[in-house]
Amino acid sequence: MTRCLRSSVLFFRFPRLYARRIHLIVLLALAGVLLSGCAGRLPAVSWAGMTPAGDTLYVAFSTHIYALDLSNGNLRWHYPESIQGVAAQFYAPPAVTEDTVIAGSYGAPGTPEVLVGLDRSSGKERWRSEQPALDTLNTHVIGGIVAQDRRVYVPSTDHRLYALDPVSGTLTPFFEGAQNALWAAPLIVNDTLYLASLDHRLYALSAADGAKLWEFQAGGALAGTPAYADGVLYFGGFDSQVYALDAQTGQARWTVSLEDNWVWGTPAVRDGTVYVSTLAGQVYALDAASGAQKWVKQVGGPVRGGPALHPQGDTLYVGAADGKVYALNNADGELRWVGETAVTTHIYTTPLVVDDLVIIAVNDAPNDNPALVYAFDAATGQVRWKFVPPA
Image (cartoon, rainbow, N blue to C red; front, side, top):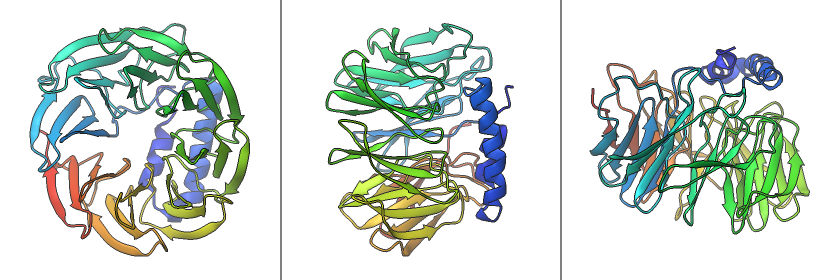
C-alpha cells in the first residue's frame, strides 16, 4: 500500500504518445487510492516547492529548505545543516510570515508529519512540531501552507485542515469535514477560505472558524488550488473538466471538458481569459465568461504545475516534465522561446515570474549537471543563474 501512487507519479515521465494509456494506469492507481484510503502515500522522492518573499527565494525539496538570493541564486542559508537522521521529505512550498519560514513535510512511512518554523534571516530553527495521527490515517503535508494576517493554515493527508500558531507551532484541527486527502493549498479571499480535496469536492469555509459555507461536487479528485477573479473560482480536476463557480454561492457558471486531459495545477486568469495546463501536456486558453476555447497548444511533456503570466507582459510560461520551460504568446499560444535544463530532468513546479526572471525547480537533476533551480530571462529564455545545492 505504501507504493499505491507510484504509478501516478510515473505518469509524468511519459510523452503524450502514451497519454491515454497512462491516463488509464493513473486512473486505476488513483481509484485504488480513493477506495483504500492510502491517498497520503507518495514515493520517497519529492517535488520542489518555491516561495518568493522580498529579495529571497525559499525552496523546499527532498530533505532540505534553501534560502536563495533572488537576483543571483546565491545560497543564504539551508536547513538542516546536517541531514543525519532526517526522515522528512518536503513537497509543499513554505509559508513566509514577517519573521518566520514555515514548512511541513511528508515524513517517512509510519512517522508523523513534521512542521518547522525557521528564522527568516538565518534559517535557525525556532520551533518544531510533530503532529501524531489523530486516528488510523497518516498525517503528511503535500499541499502548500498558507499564511495570511497572522493566520496559518496547513492542509494534511489525514483529511483535515489545521490552524497553526506561527509563534509556538501548535496545531489545532480547523476543518474536519473532508472525506479524503488535502493535496492543495487553500485559497483565501477576504473572509472565505476555499479548499480542494481528493474527495472530489471544493469547500468554502469561514476563514475565522472553519464553518462550512457551501461545497461543490466535481466529477473527480481535486489536487490543485482554485484561481479567483472577479467573483468567480476557476479550477480543474482529475475528471478532465474545468469549472467556473460563483465564489459566493458555489453555483456553477460553466463546465468544460478537456477530452481526457487531467488538470492538477492552478489556472491563471487575466483580461477575460482562463489559462489551464494539463497532464497530457496541453495548454488551453478559455473564455472566462463562457468557457469557450480560444486556443490550445501542445508542449513537450505533461504539465503538473499551473501556467504563469508575466505581470507586465503578454507571455505565458509553463514548465513541463520534459525538463523544459515554454514561453507562449498568451493571445494565440504561439511559441516564443523554450528554456532548456538538463536533458534528464523533470519540471513539476509552477514557474515563478519575478521581475524579469522566470524561475523553476527541477526534480531529479543528474549527477553531471546537479542544478536544482534555474532562473531564465523572461524575454529571451537564456539562463541567468542556476543554483546547485551544496554536497
